[in-house]
Length: 92
Image (cartoon, rainbow, N blue to C red; front, side, top):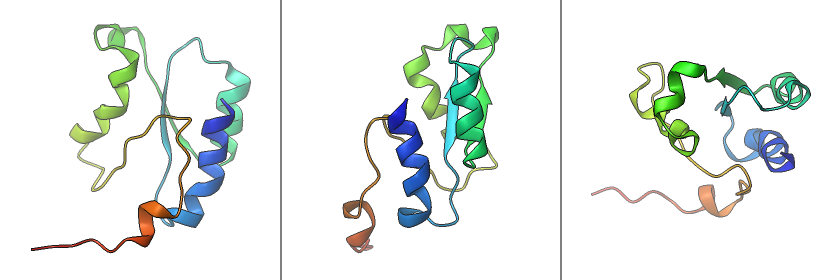
């Protein structure tokens, strides 16, 4: 769970103005969720109705959320870093 906390700390550096959104199951310790929330993460608690969708796929729910314009999906232990934002986007 330290990976998530590190990414929440790094988010303002590499993605200023963005929010870290974390989808959590009911078995995630409340103390961890409280820390993430206190650091500014948006916590989405997945209920029993989400059991049909494997937890590893919850992160892709953002794709169908009309309140989200852009998103980046990653594993919690994959650190945000300068390589993500230092390369210019090429458009054609």
